[in-house]
Length: 271
Image 1 (tube, helix red, strand yellow):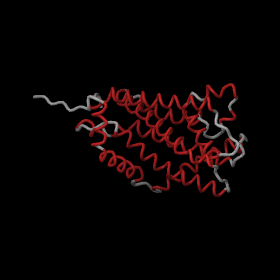
Image 2 (cartoon, helix red, strand yellow; image 1 turned 90 degrees about the vertical axis):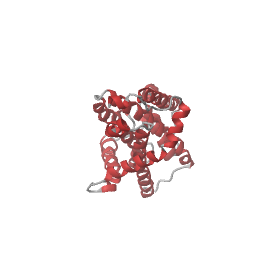
Image 3 (tube, one colour; image 1 turned 120 degrees about the vertical axis):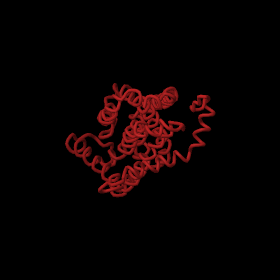
Image 4 (cartoon, one colour; image 1 turned 30 degrees about the horizontal axis):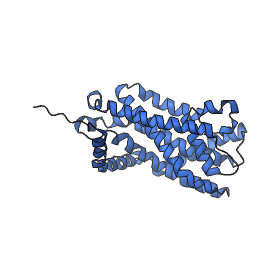
């Protein structure tokens, strides 16, 4: 008699499985967090040094050399407010993209909802995000820059960021199992995305006629939302572009989940 173990045939069963395997989710997240800093020379300090050094480099290039406008705020704060969501997305995208391959032995031996693996890898990036958030608060305190009441809306933009990271992560994780060439796509997307996203500069430097087209990059709306909430002042959120980014993030999340579920049953055979 042949016994086949597979994911729940209906979505309700699948979500029940996710709840049943919640402890596995916690274990994988904790394991990835420990592995990231295990046997490293500077340990958790790397989570502090990386955003600080990146901020200094971008401030030097765009603020000092290119002398781009800073929307009336200290340039390091302008950059760090964008690094906060960008590094979370870049790290989540990379970690989730390679997560299934890294756990091939587990996938081929036992059943559990495979989405647990890329989803848990995002938790590690969220810990770094929280550390960077504390650094941003200290940086704003150093410059004597106080946020406005808009800061209360930051959790909403954070949810949008998580949706973009999870959606992109599910797409690249599933594609990386079937087409191993995508392991080369991951670092390219992260590097190229840094240049085409408004991390080292404000979106306001983009000509008005190009703003809507520029917003087809979903991270533009996410980054602009973070800056709008954190920096306050007289800055205005470019609503047409933000709504496009929000729509694209939703599409990426829904389609990423659908494609992941469609290909999930083949992971154990292909991997």
